[in-house]
Amino acid sequence: MQRYYYSDKGFVESADWSKGDWIDVECPDESDRRFLIDKLGVPEMFLEYLGDIDERPRIEREGEWQMAIVRIPVESDDKGAPFTTVPLGIISNPSGVLLTLCYHPNAMIPDFVDHTRRKQIKIEHLANFVLRIIYSTAFWYLKYLKMLTNDVTGAEKHLERSIRNDDLIWLMHLQRSLVFFSTGIKGNITLLDRLQRIYGNQIDPELMEDVEIELKQADTTVDIYTDILEGTMDSFASIISNNVNGIMKRMTGLSIILMVPTFIASLYGMNVDILIGGSRYAFWIILLLAFILTALAFLVLRHIKWV
View 1: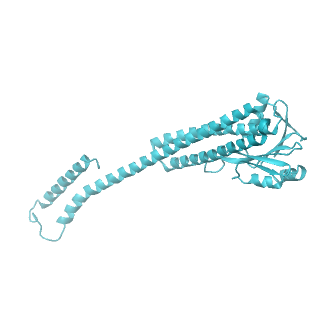
View 2: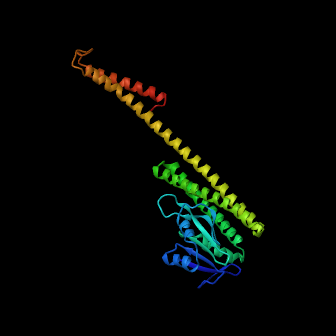
View 3: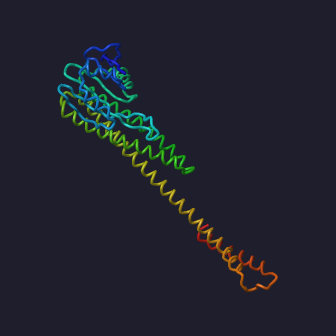
């Protein structure tokens, strides 16, 4: 799917593309690929790179074409981690072609367009356009991190009431999202340093400072949430282990208590002459003895808190 934007106090969508406009391509089909390769001349290698979900942030060049790969956060559609990161390519050449390409649906680009309209931001240089995109990724990382925090809090409340495997598995999935975020943010920070070396004085210094601050804040936030989540999972793992130990201790105590009357019944059940075997009250005496020894064993184990 293709969208065309021209810059006029923010990006404004247009029906047709003209030279100098920004082209946004999302989830490209075969017709989009033919438009990019045949009409615009975009190197097919760039499209193959962006088709790999594991591509790292970097700068690629092919002839006069240049591509900056940025990792952006998206909501995951599988049953694992609720959020993940995917590559977004910013492709350009000296003749005025500028396009962004992502093989996955995302909410960042429409929000980026709305933000430029609200703030009436006019972007004229490629370096500043890339910086604005990276700045938007930092905002969305922080937004999704807040949602992850709410998920962690909800899972903790469920675990406080009852420790279930489903809640622990959900925490594990949240931890996977944090790993994806940490890797993506650190890659974008590396890309930012690379852009600063390439474009130098052409970059707006205030914008560069804002982007650095936002990325570092997102990176620090991910580290904090990762530590909190790891501590939470370790704590609940210890609680589960203690609960299992307590259950096993009680089961052992009950086994010892039940062993006493079983031992007496087995002893007096042998087909041999036994003490008080000729007494008419032998059964009741044996039963009373078993009861007294069982009660004594229970009191001893209760005193050492085994039952």
